[in-house]
Image 1 (spheres, rainbow, N blue to C red):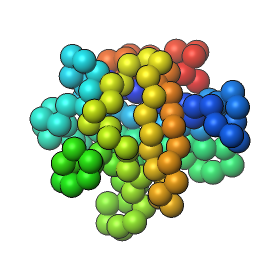
Image 2 (spheres, rainbow, N blue to C red):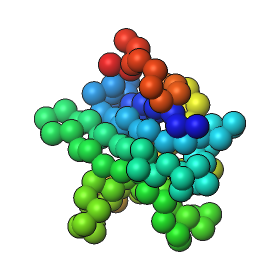
Image 3 (cartoon, rainbow, N blue to C red):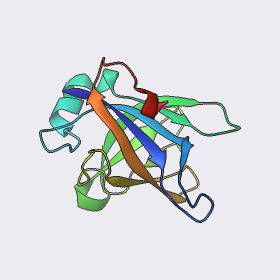
Image 4 (tube, rainbow, N blue to C red):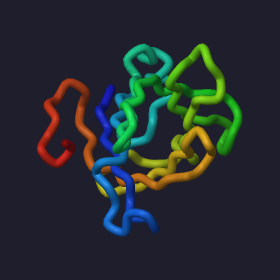
Length: 134
C-alpha cells in the first residue's frame, strides 16, 4: 500500500531544534512493519514520488528508485533527473529502517553529505495533509 511520508531535518549542529523547513515528502509502499516494500514498489514505481523542500531553494521533484548494490544488497535513492546521472540522493540503509513517526533516517545529499531526518508523519496515500506536516 502506498503511503505519504513526511521527513523533517533532525537536530544537528546547524539546527539544534531541527527544522521543519528542511525535508522530504515521499510517496512509497510500506509493509506492515513500516519498511519500504520492494515488491510493491516494482508494481507501483510510477507512483513513487519525492519532493525535497529546502529554504531558499526551489523544490526538487523526483522519483524513488531502488538499485542493486550498497549496504544490504540494495540502495534506495531519490532521483531528480533520470536522464542525468549524479543528481541522486542515497538513503542510508533505508531498506532496514522503519518509516514510523518518531523514527530517524539518514539521506545523503548529491554531495554525499549525510543528513538525519525525523519521520514526522506517515499516512495512506490520498489522505489530506495535517497542520503538523505543513
